[in-house]
Amino acid sequence: MLRRHPPLSPSSKLTDYLLMTRTLQYIVVGLSSFVVVPLVIYTFYYPTFHSDICSWPSASRSPRDLRLLLFGDPQIRGTDTSSSLRTRLDIFGNDYYLGHIYSTLLSRLHPSHVIVVGDLFSSQWISDEEFDLRTRRYKNRIFRRPSLDVTPAPVLLNLSGNHDIGYAHDITDSRVRRFEKHFGQLNFVVTGDDFRIIGFNSMSLDGSLDDDEKGQASFTRDVRNFLDEQMKVNFIGTTILATHVPLHKQRGICIDQPYFTYYDEESEQLVREQNMLSEETSQWLLNGFFGEGRAGHGVIINGHDHEGCLVRHAVVKGEPRWNVAAIATGDTRYQYDYDNSDSSGVLEVTVRSVMGQYGGNVGLLKGTWNTSTQDYTFSFSLCPFVQHIWWATYVMAIICACATVIAFIGLPFLDEKARRVFTGTMTPPILNSDPICHRSRHTIPASPPTSGRQTPIDVFVSGGKARKID
Figure (cartoon, helix red, strand yellow):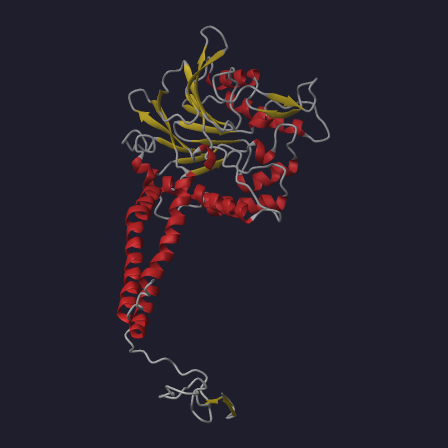
């Protein structure tokens, strides 16, 4: 025969309720201490945990040193009316994820220059309105102006990429105008005492010189004339070439392979797509800036190849020709030192993309001024920050904040009411009292009959009317 357990006494119910509250508080404290706090510390101080690759290799702070942060292909996307909530949330979070990387490295490393090597946006085909919208996101969420405590403020340089203005045969006047309106000239020079940074529109270098109705030939002439003028400058110092499309390399050296497609396959002039510059154009750049009779000192930086690559170009003795050898590819963790005084070779850095799916990488290129050689010694490393850690930090922080409010504010407030209910010290409120008789319509006799037929009970309702219930 089954026995019915006696109902819990009020004190037992109260004990269970308070135990549940205390357990939730312990869970919140444990979650904060062992999950959220470590995540927050790592997220905001991750360069410290990877000081071998996320810091400048030399402690020297000469005013002549160069400290460059290199961002490759952020390619921020946009939304439209058909975009799902998940897509909108992903794009919103990605903006602040990239902005977190920039602000964290900016405040800790104090770079002299920040260079975004093209492909700021994900498509060159977007409307002017969408371009303006993404520009505001780019400047307000990602590459925000540094606060007053970051002094001196770094020089921010934005290169054009194929997803900003198009490849050679896709470039139009309107695309160039809107880019230059917000980000400056396609072709520019930044000069210091011992260095110069030359940025240029690499997408037009292999374009056609024959005029057509689109006018792309004018951009090819502009960039070639600009580079010709810079090659003729008798500059004694280090030249840093900043381009979006990498120089030519043989198959197997980098992950990207030589690849060209044309709108007119017969003429091979109307470029539709390219992974690298042509071999002819690459040799022209190397000889013009670093060849015989030139200072021969410098570094080439670019993007486009999302996987990244690090190579060294070496001139062939007695010939105006350069060979190339691989140093590192992909997401290899490395720090590479390059003696710029060695005029027989030029370092080319293809920065791995800062996009989350490629590891959130930023290139750290430092030129340390060598007083004995009167030249720079360069070092380069990749500093990654995994996007899932950023998402986990903020999601867990939000969950923990909500749980804290419930456990330490909401439940203690309910605890007090629970004590009064379970201990019988709370008087139930009188609901909907009758304005005339001042008696609740739910009032029952204090001593109801214990036997026989139940006597009628007067039930008073609002308005003073009553009826008998058998």
